[in-house]
Image: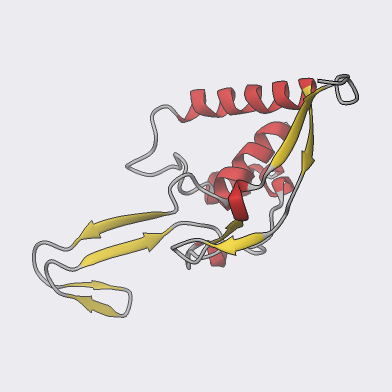
Amino acid sequence: RPVLQFVRESMRYKVPVSGFRRSQTSDWTSVGEYDVPPGVAITTSVDALTCPLLSLISGSAKFDPQRWAQPAFAAKNFLFFGGKQPHACAGKPVALVEMQMFAQMLCRDYEFQVLSQETAPDRFLNLNYKDGLPMRVWRKGMRNVAA
């Protein structure tokens, strides 16, 4: 299922929420090698390019939908978007079906032309397309029709 693989890789590579912020409110705690005092905000990045946990996945900086063709990889590594965890998204199956249908309808009915691939870092230093990857979109068969 190539479209599902593409959707999963898109969600792994550039998650909708690139970080979580929590405040340590009780006693001192340890986060990795750091001791964190009460009241200090802790921010964790889950973006594929900046998250230390995701760097353990071989080739995590590369966009590669084929990695999801292996069921063992999918079961082990689909961590953040509704993965097998206590805080998994209850709507994940419906969301995945909707995203696949949306992607298939767009690709079936429209043509796309990227206008600029210029990138720039955002406020979290993640590399994003400047101005949101501007594109020109046509309904198929309507590209050369005068507006």
